[in-house]
Length: 425
Ligand code: LLP
Image (cartoon, rainbow, N blue to C red; front, side, top):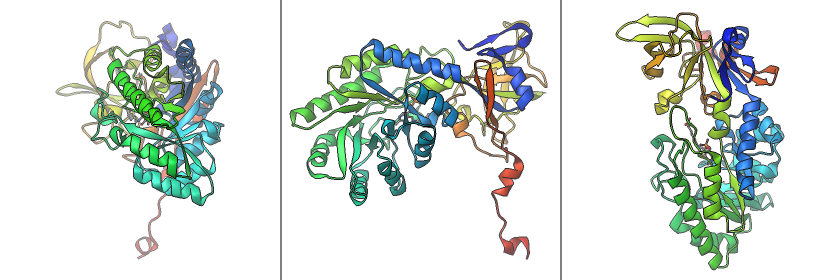
């Protein structure tokens, strides 16, 4: 990991900050996110497109990491936002992202959410179905506005990733079937006054580490654009979605230059404004989840029980995903170690972070970091087992700040009400 290293008695250091100090100061479990890593990756991504001379607008997929401080860092790097709810839209605006730089994706946008988007005149709403198209057109006419939209195309292509994060097959709920696009496009551009149809969008899935699905998806979009233009229709924007994967373990994850290359080769000569919506690639490596070993239980297996659980980081339980685990103290011998199961405290068998993994030996009280937790970590947390939401710390050079304080149990309880007739029978 480029942003993590062991420095003798300081132990594991992230961008100059010893992580054990943060764990002791703020308690565990807690999340740490590096603004510098975010910035560096944001620049690397933009540079990859600039190197190919591609006119690309980058919209960060807020669902991966929705903290306003992170959105602010990315906005300062010239990123817009890809949002999937009214809540994310409000967050992006609150973080200073301009409405014109916001794309609204999502399979089930409510009337209220669409009205919010129309009201703020955001850059683009990605329409997922003919039903949503009619609803949006009527709402915009009622508000006497014209909403800028793109059609999200379902290209019927398998992204070759985990099936729970695959979105571009015909049987997936997303997008408008590619063969029905031309007729609907014509009808929309000729008849509908509430919407201004500017182009097409596609997103095939997430954690994609092979080139072929990107290429096939964009080729399909390119051929659709040619068909539409041959029919005299206007296409000015193509949204290439997100999905670029990272190496959580030993995956051969391709760099952003691969994505830029594929986009250049498939869509580069269409003379359109391009958009991308990356989430994971930017945010995952910028964050870690810190936890403390509660006990090492010797049973049929050696279980290292830590104080973070699936309620904090659900990815291993939900997708069997692999996250690196490192002790925060400098291990005496990195080659030695024990084969252990690292588990959380939640009363579910799926609350496991690592099965039969060789790790430097860990004992009660030791601190560990779960790696690549900056995307789809905090945002998917819950309070399952009445566990308050963990604190979030941002580090930025030699500065650091608590960007979300740990929720208290009192706050959790205060949101509930016991009806009078039960409390005072
Ligand atoms: N655009 C759209 C329309 C999306 O649905 C997504 C992710 C993205 C962009 C960003 O994709 P990324 O660049 O992050 O791969 N919770 C899962 C991931 C779900 C992704 C959903 N859509 C996980 O933890 O692996």
